[in-house]
Length: 111
Image (cartoon, rainbow, N blue to C red; front, top):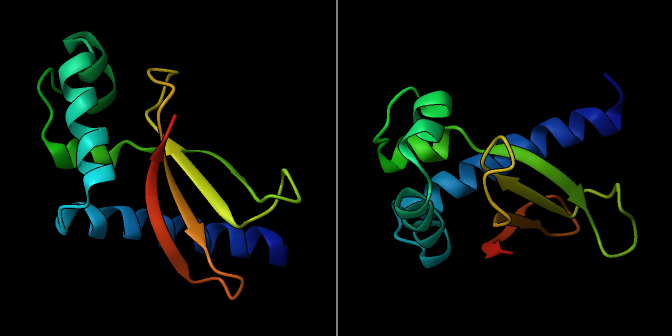
């Protein structure tokens, strides 16, 4: 694994941890993402991806997948990491932004 791939792996894990922490702290962006999708997505989707037709908030967070990483100057950059639900279920993303020194800056929801 190259240095870039190692950093992508590290930031992916850090981003997912930041999403979990933001949710636990009641962050509006993450809680809105979860509640919106629990209301709007059909039971069959949840059964397929979460193993239950009525997942918990935590189960929704547990199935998030990395959609992309980028930055303003480079489509393959590592400044912003976007997560979404698997299977093209939504156009919404939970985006995690990193500082120049690789620390999580903030978490937001995007469409």
